[in-house]
Image (cartoon, rainbow over all chains, first blue to last red; front, side):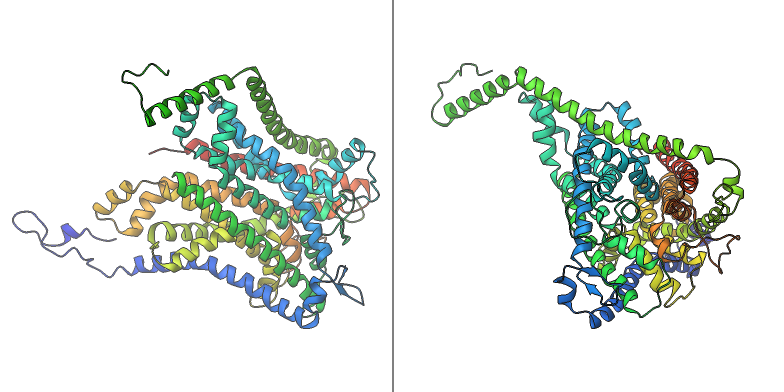
Length: 319
Length: 314
C-alpha cells in the first residue's frame, strides 16, 4: 500500500535518497485507524460517565422524596411497604457482615498460599498450584452460591450444633463462601508483591543467620506489605460487590444483626431482588435501587482507589 | 568472625566491633531448637492454608458432580425449560440465549478491548492528562461490582438512550462493558511485553505505525491477548447478577432472538431452577451447574495453559 520512501524518490549518484523523509501521502487510512483506536480508549471513560449519570439522576429523584435523615439515621429498611421506611443501615450492616466473614477466611488462607508459593514452593510445585488457584477464581458465582446454600450450610449446622440455626439462610456461611472465592485474588496479588522483593534483601538476612521462617515473616512480608494490604482491600471490595452468592445463601430479610446464623439482606441482594421484577421507571421503588446502587458504587470506588495507590507504591519501590 | 584487630581499636571502631560481635552472637544463638520448631509449625500452617484453598475447589466440583450427575443426559441440552415437568425440562433456550449473549460479547469486546489497549500502549502520550485519566479509569472500572453494570444496563441500554428493551442484545452490551477492562488490561500487558527493538526494526524498514502494530506487535502479543479474551468470555458465560437486571429472568420456552423477545442464559436458568421448592428442580439445577462448570473451567484452563505455553522472555 504505502511505497517505500527511499525507492520512490529519485536517488543521487552517491546512492542516498534525496527526497524529504516526510510522508509522501497524507495516509488517511492511518489517521482513520488512529481515530478508531482513540475512540476505543475514550469509550471506557464514556462507560464510567454513563454509570455515574445513570446512578445519579434517579438518586436525586430519590432524595427529593426521602430525606437524608430518613436514609442515614433510621434503622429500619422496608422500602416496599405502604409506609415505607428507608433507613439504610440494615443493608449496609448486612454487607459489612459478609465482608467481615469473607476477610476472616480470605486473609489467612490467601496469605498462607501466597507465602508458600513465593518463598517455599519449588518452581515445579508453583507451576502446578498457581494455575489451579486461578481456576478457582473462575468458578461462576452462581455455582459458589449454590454450594454455600446446599452444601456448606448443612455442614455448618452439623459441625456447630450448639449455635441457634433458626432460619434456612446464614450470613456467616455466605460470607465464608465469598471468602473462599476471593482467596485466589489475595494469593495472586500478595504473591506478586512478595516476589517483587529483591533477592538481596533475603540474602542479606540469610547472611546474618536468619532461617527461612524468619526471612519470610520478618523481611519479605514487611517489605511487601503495601501489595499485601492492597490485595486485602481488593478482596474487601469484591465482597462488598458480590451478588449471587449472597443473594442465594444469605437470604433476603433486612436485619440489623451480627449473628452469623441469621439471614440478612445486603445492598447487592436488595438491588438484585427488587430490580428483577419489571418496575416502572420513575416510581420510588425504581429510584431506591439507584440510591442503594450509588452507595455501593461509592464504597467500592473508595476501596479500589486505595488499592490502586498501594499497588503503585510497591511497584515504585522495587521495579 | 571477630578476629583480633591488628591495630588497637579506639573509640568508634571498638564500639562497632563489639556491636558486630553482639549481633552475630545473638543471631547464631537464635537458631536453636525452638526456632526450628517454630519454622516447622509455620510451614505446616502455610500448607494447611493452601490445602484448604485447593480442597474447596475440589469440593465444589465433586459436590456438583454427585448432586447433578443423575440428570446429565441429552434432554438437558435438547429440551426447553419447564416449570411443571422437572423430569423432562432442560436448558435448551437458556443455552441458546447464552450463545447469543456471549457471541455478541465476543463480537464487541475483541475489537474495542484490543483497540483500546493498542491505543494506550502504542499511540497515547503518557504525559497528556487525558491518557492518564483513561488509564486510571480502566483500573477503577475493573473493580466496579457487576451488579452496578446491571444498573447501568437497566438505565442506559434497556431504557433511556438506547431503549432496546429486555432483549438478548441488551444483555450482550451490558456484559461487554463488564468484561471490557479485563480484556484491555490483559492486552496491554501482552503488548507492553513486546520489546521496543521489534518496533524500531519495523519502523526503520519503512513500515508505518499501523503496519508495525498489525504485522509485528499484535502477532507477538497474540497469546497474551488471547488469554485475556478467553478469560473475559468465561466470565461473561458464568455471570448472572447483571443479567437479572436487564431481563434474563423469565422462563423462556421458545428459542430466543437477539433483538426481540424474552431471553435467559445458562447461569440465570440454573438460579431459577434452584429457587424452586421441588427436589427434582434442584437436581436439574445441579446438572446445569455441571454443564456450566464444564464450559467455564475448560475455557479458563485453556487460557491459563495458553499463557504459560507461550510466555516468552525476549
